[in-house]
Length: 557
Image 1 (tube, one colour):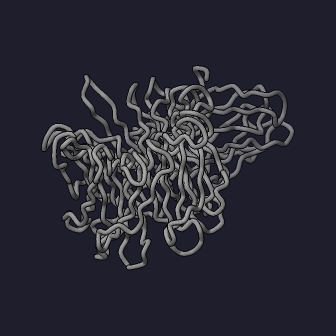
Image 2 (cartoon, rainbow, N blue to C red):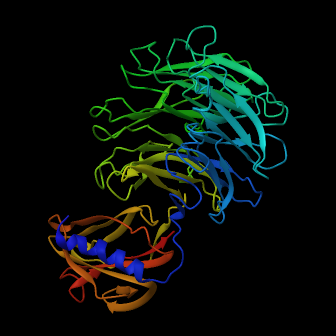
Image 3 (cartoon, rainbow, N blue to C red):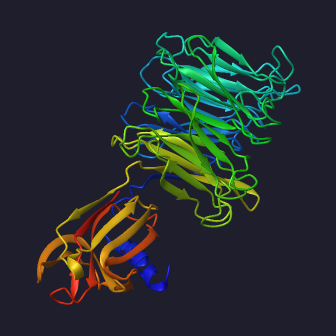
């Protein structure tokens, strides 16, 4: 981008910052390390509406919190409505890493409030690390269920998830991973589906090979088979059925426990199944689907990573999303983003903690369309080594009818684990054309369009087309629309905030062939605002030596 092109992006940024002081809507909440939540950022989840206020809430894990003892851990429920702390749960002993896994649990006790589940995989002594998981009431924070591991170094609780109501008793159930457990074979690993009503095991699934890490990731709660019962997904990232540590994902029927699909990683040490999530309907068949991460896969260089979306019904691959370059570790975290663009398909969110786009290892979260796999939005870390990339859907945090998302950064500063979490609005703003442009050379009316996400931190591209090639353009930025005739059918359609930005050279040659494009990122501190934008193009065929585009009203949300 040349210097003059940058001027438009800078002008937009400064103009946005100058308009009022209404709160930013792109980032609904930003929770910083400390402040009663511990070293957060690595474990995030939607909690559901735990307090019954109509706003979905957020669950954060801080497994290295030292409040009780060194690395005892903490988990915090944050209000989606206010951003305040609703519940803070503390670990039970040193080095337990309580909060290493967190998830909404559905309504386990049948009181009408969403509950949560938290894992502490390194809990236990003599010799230890058998692990445990607890389900807590969303309404009052009391412990509802305790699930303890039975194998030393079993690491029960390294993954936890809602399972939905598997046994149809009116109480939601949960699934917990126990990857080092010994069942019918040494170190096969297992996943336990536990009744929300009784706390007793409903199903126990065992791994296929010793030390395959069966249960390192678990998810459930959607019906993929069409029998009306939610099904389960279990990851074994170190399984060598296909190739050495290529990984395996086991999709199981919630109603019968039978295998629905067995999905394999592509190549050795892909660690396919290290992260996974059930999703809503991505392919439009009316059934749930799933997304699986393989962070050590090498599609675009060593450790570039990938995430793959599968049909829940058939097991067929729907999309594969890859890291851009070596060390991106794409798919380290994956989730269901909800239907953020209103096309009837659930969209996907994927973390790339090693991505270097803004700075070295700043990290990146991408939201992909469930309809065509295109990138809908990107959210980068702020600084080098932020390693943003923990991701999750958040349901509807601001109660606007659009699904929201959570992203987290967990990194070291001065040798100390720190981080931050951002809750992002699913709403993307709007660009609405108003008024009319006027014709120039060859009778062509220049066009002005905008693509991208009009939220603070969103990336947008302003496009001018259909203009006189080799000419120049000027941009007028305003806060309100006007209609001031200027002759020759042309009108000024914005009330300018400042002098026009330009001249900016148009590419192409001849009538109707001129174009210009600028991609810029709106500042994170952009306030809620409506702006107006219009382009004037130098063209001798115009009555005053110029012609105009229609106006664009930009709603920054």
